[in-house]
Length: 429
Image (spheres, rainbow, N blue to C red):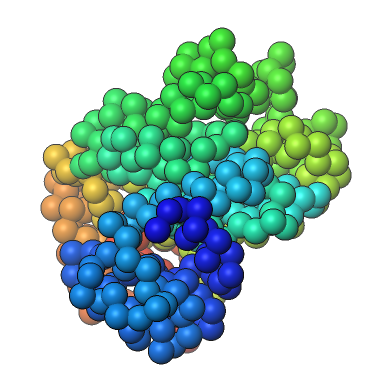
């Protein structure tokens, strides 16, 4: 079946589904495969649960007038997404980077939705499956699409850009993330810059953080919009403070955000710049930034029992961990305890990077440092205010949780560490 024909059938459906447990009536089911599952086996079940069509790629499951046999389900999903993106003919903003992608995406969505009907990536559906699903969730009512792109190896952003064909792009930063896949920080820069390569080749618009010398150099003589604190940039935004929330000045307006940490200044500034480009009223920009409250374990401030908690446990890498700890160092609170978990996907650099974080932490104005996970447990640094636990269960069994009473806590770690579980322990009586 040609992709145009499949698209016509897609338009008859409510939405795309890739999980039979979440199918709703009139969905189009795509039978994706993985190392431990084969969606083709669930085609019949998908129909029984209400799917209108099932896209499969194994002949033996082509047993119904509602099944559509293709050569490769994943490739068909991606081709359909690109076709749909061109069918809608709407502007697409894409963003990637080592840190701050999701927060920046949410801020962009918050500001642009003041004037436009937007559709943005939900959660972190930002890979070779998530990007197509995001595009296919857009409708004729969508006026601007906002697509987050994640990557852990070279050529991935290149593929995602070919699928989404963005008109605008922004790279938050280059950091020490996914070193195992990229091989080095240089690999990270090359991989993330695949977005710039696409935008430049297609004469599209690049938003650039003026404080990033690498991005300034790579985008010289291109169609770009530069923002930052320096007078003379296309957009000037002044940082005021982050004690603890980020406060800034834009077009003679003081904006007080609910985001903690100076590292969030660039995320906010990028959203303001993009909103300005799309002619959002300055007061609407101010309102949307000030009303945005982080969720999903990202830079959340939570008051629980007798503790004030900075929960930044969605993910971690050496760059974001250092930024979070440095911000924590600047807080004026009297009893500060950092509880940090292992950082994953660092490959051969794991030992050194975990050691560096412990050394940094012990030099900061932090009353106690608690590290959890094999990598942190095996670090060599030892000081009186440092406690090491091999696993979360080790921490749970051997640490007296009441010792966190009346403290300000920073909780951070990679997603696989699920550091937010600490909140369940905080029932201090």
